[in-house]
Each structure stands twice: as structure tokens, then as C-alpha cells.
Length: 442
Image (cartoon, rainbow, N blue to C red; front, side, top):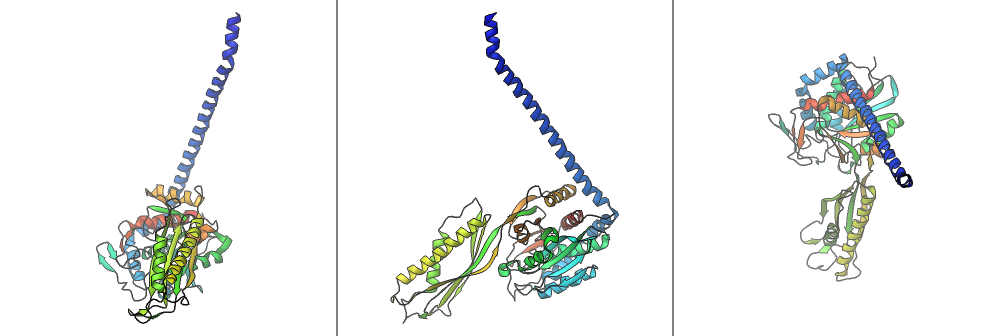
């Protein structure tokens, strides 16, 4: 008896702990199943709501219009792309887009920055869904922007970036007009300036400042692809670094410090530094200039640089390293000069700074887009980039960047191309997302 009692006492607590573990495991399993069922039911309900929205007579009219009028959208893309829009000279293209918006019955204005803004009032003027597509291109004045057409394939500088985005905005304006849908939130469509190059996102900055707390969501329509949802904004610094010196004759003043040589030394030093993969970062020496003739020592040389990273602190670190490298290059060049009194000066000028930001994974905006994609059978992935969405995301305003439909490639080259096959998917995606976010009035 004593042995049995002792054995029972010895094994009793461990047996109880085992039973408790099994009980807790069962409870945890039940809780996980409940949450999984709730998530499934929520996703199904959300998907059903998009399906119900698409069955609304107003939306049926819009979706039918899209199916029948993709060729009209492509024609507008060609017209828009053939209007040159280099940095700081987007006016003529803005005027053409303004006429498209006006023909769709929208209230349109051009602001002092050059943005063309079209409003479609909802019942609540204090809640706004903003869709913006940038008007500008990276190509300088004088670039041949005539569109060459080979079947469905269009080729021209800027035809996809951002001819595709602007055409999608034009198509959305017409689809909304054809639908005659009444929304709760006000819908604003804008062609904005200054997204590319040295524009420093000045157009979207003004739009976000103007609408301020009224912004419920922002969608930047940029490029063609429907395969992504850009939810993370990449930070970037754009700089011009110049080096000035005494200059001189290539023969009689040989030995004077040369700004081009000094700048080259700095570029080589910086390029030898490691760039992290995590956070992903990059740099580009995009423009370099200097000198007046082959037989003159230049008095000035300059380079324009683009620094990017997922982490804003890493961009700051890269900028410090770049400044140090160029200063070191200038010192090395001066150390070989024949006259110690002949010096070089390094001048750094900011061309723009784009802030970072990220849309939370559980944001209602992202959930709406995923539900629209599920309804349309569109497979998309989350991406990170530097777009107009940077500004609202940096201010914690829900924002994404989406493509307007079709496919494109060769961005920022004169061989850029666009294929409009299947572009109706992108147009329907934008329309359903916009109306879902704005809310349909009964």
C-alpha cells in the first residue's frame, strides 16, 4: 500500500501537468479554428461586397463602358504622350487633360503649381479619395515623342511612364461619368507636376497640403502594371555636387588642380564602398558635366546623384559617405598641384528629398484593393518604390501606387514601350477600388 501511495504521489503532479497541457492545446486549437473561420467569413463577406458593388446598375454601366472603349483610352494615351512634358514644362499636357476632364462633366481647375484638378462631389465634401497621375517625363525638351504603333505595341519616350497612368485617369473620368454613380466621399482626379527628376514631388505635395485632413485615401496611378500594389515609399536624396577651381590652359597651366579629375576621384572612392542589401539601397550618378573645351582645364565640374534606400537613416549615411568621398578626392587632387595657393572648392546642392513611409498591412485601403483583385482574378504582390505616394505615406495618410493597366517596359529610355492588351483589367480595378472606397449612395 505504501509503495502504491508513494508511486501515486510521485506521478500525480506530472500526470496533472500533462492533462493541463493537453487541455491548453485543445483550447488553443479551438481558438485558432475560430479565428480562421472568422477571417474566412470576413474575407468572403468583403469579396461578396465587391461582387454586390459590381452588380449595382451604375457600376454595370461603367464596367460595360470600359469593355467597349479601351481603344478610346489608348487614343488618349497617344495624344497625351505626344505632347512634350519635360520637367517644369507640363503646361500643354495639363491643358489637354483638363479638356478630357471637362468633357466628362467634372469641375476642373489648374492650380498655381500647374496641377490639373477635377472634382466629382460626393455627399461628404470633407472626405476625399484622391487619384493622381504625374504629367511630367524625364525627357528633355526637343526629344522626339512621336508614338510608333505596331499592332497593340506602342513605342515612345514616356508612353508607359506616365502615358499609361494619365490615360487610365482619363478612362476613369469617363467611366464615372457613364456610371452616374452617386458616392458618399468626394472623388478627386489630378494630373500633377514634378514627380520625375528634380521636381521633388512638388505637385503631390501641394495637393496633399491643400486637401489635408479631408484625405481618406490617395492612389498614385503610375505606369501600367496591375501585378503590384506599392505600399512602401522608398526614401531618396538627390544632390548636385560641384567642384570649382582656377581653370587654365591645358599646356601653360598644366599642374593646376582639375575639378573633373577631383570629382572622378571622389566618384571612384564612393563607388568602392559597400551598399547594403538589407535595407535595400542604391545610388546612381546620372548626369556629369564640366569644362568648355578639350584644351582648357575646367573651372567647374558637377555631377547629379540619386541616393535611395528603404531606410531613411541609410540614405543619410550614404549622403555623408558621398560628401566625404568627394572632399577626399578634392584633397588628393590639390595635393598634386604645382602651386599650393591654387585650391578647389566643393559645393553641394540639394535637388530634392523624398521621405519614406509604409502602409500598414491591415489598412482598410489595402484590404479593399485585395478584395477587388480577388473579384477580378488579378494576382498582385506588394512592392516598394519612389512615387507620388511617398508624400501621403510619410504623413500617415493611407496611400498606394497602382498601374493603370496593360504592360510596359524600357522606362526612362527612348525605347520605352506599352502594350494595351488586357488594359481593361487595370481600368476596372481602378474604378471598383475608387467606388468601393468612396461608398455608393443608395
